[in-house]
Image 1 (cartoon, rainbow, N blue to C red):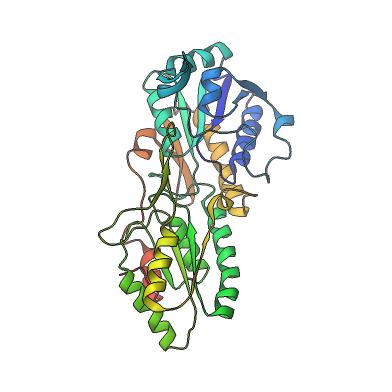
Image 2: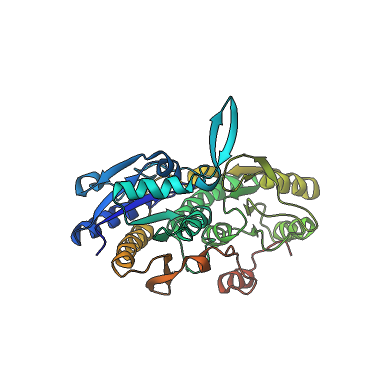
Length: 360
């Protein structure tokens, strides 16, 4: 019987992280298992920055956004940045992570994270550490699970923004462009665009033809619609073109920071149609705030399932939602590639039947 587990949150934050932490602690306490939290993701694991987590520490955190443990998307223990003689060097500190956990008495590490954090967890498991993963990302791009927690809350935030953009777009007869997150997958754009009544949705999986977009806007004008709403995923790209990279950030799990495609698409479109365009970049607002009801329940289910996996000896796995059931899948299957929107996805096909234009 496992007596003590450790838990960390890694990568970008999202609504529902605290709900998972709370569920892990409450379930562990129910089974007589101690929990230690690791501050600031794998940085705290390398630097031995641990704290005890009990019922008092997780009381009242269910509706709170962010994570009480802190997080980081930079500190990969296999390439950990250290300062020596005035220079930044990268060293493999993975053995230090394992040693710190052993010294703390933690027998299993629960990693709440996206593909970057879970790839690190997989690498640690290959060195003998027992790990259980919990799928976290607003991008919903993890394989082997139908939905990640945080996604639905981010979609709801984008949908609320679209509701507000509709009124000003209609008043001023403009094309309103909303750029949303999602990295290399178009799930947020697809779902929020449908829920928010968008006329055009541009996603990474379908390179867009700006002439087709302009044609869709002009058809709306001919039909008496003097405004249009367009949702653009940050990873969208034109036919024959590339994704727009805002900048690269050394030391991050994924050094590429996307951003700017909304402005490019809007400028190109304005030159072609003669209607004013305005761009809103939703950015980190999608990551913040309280989780919605769906994500509170899903995050709680994931937390309970993670402890159940520990008790059942199902290590080197990730808890995953399939249909209405949550089970365990091999961690390697969850991070072997990103889950993008398939061209045959039923939600995408439905959107096309509604007349939403995807730049095709």
